[in-house]
Image 1 (cartoon, rainbow, N blue to C red):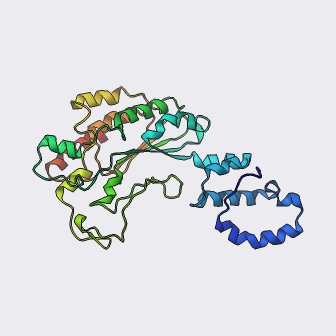
Image 2: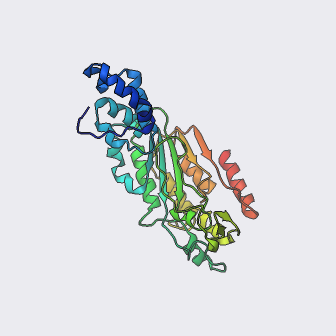
Image 3: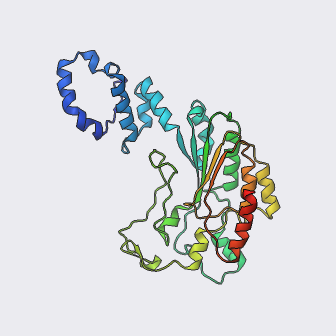
Length: 312
């Protein structure tokens, strides 16, 4: 073990071990007190406690010794949160540990917005509405370029084992206005992929958005729902449906992905006919967890028809 490395030992260990360690240190030989002198099952318990402790950063601990590096990298690389800004270094980051990666949470964070855009005014023209609620490429979130880069990287991975791709599209501002209960979390509750921070608080009053003492006292306006449930790339950057289908079809094939998650926590909607072209890029796809929100009125019938054709 590197003597210059500061090791974070969780209270769950220190509280139960400190008395026994003091006693043992007075009677056990020096070699037994060293890390490599501890029994294997004790070393494993310590590493498991480090992994489960939410306040201890694991990445620096991988430099403590070879054993810590092997065990902690197995955990650190098993589940990865990936954003557009991290795509540039993603290939080199996982090159040595590619086989450890089993889950990728691909987070496309849309631009923030303020109260002037959280519920666009009714009576807007189609062009004005598209400008207010449309989802397309921006400097912060270049959607098409991000998918292109992600598929290009994953297309080089050998199709060994299982790989889950979890795609999320949201704005951090979604939980700061009418929908303060929204959370943006990974699919697995007991791992260290950190969710993006939200500013919503149950203790705050926000009567302007229908919240009093953390409880809803007024329903969101219709346009607030339109903002959060709008279709993905519905207006831009493609001029027609065929142009969008052709764009998906030209993306590299990704045999490494075996499962795809499109979860209900993402309010913004994928069109089923677009998903058919996306799914075709994963020739080894075995499972799809697609959780669409229910549509209402004539749009419900249209969406149900499209989803039926997708399942067939």
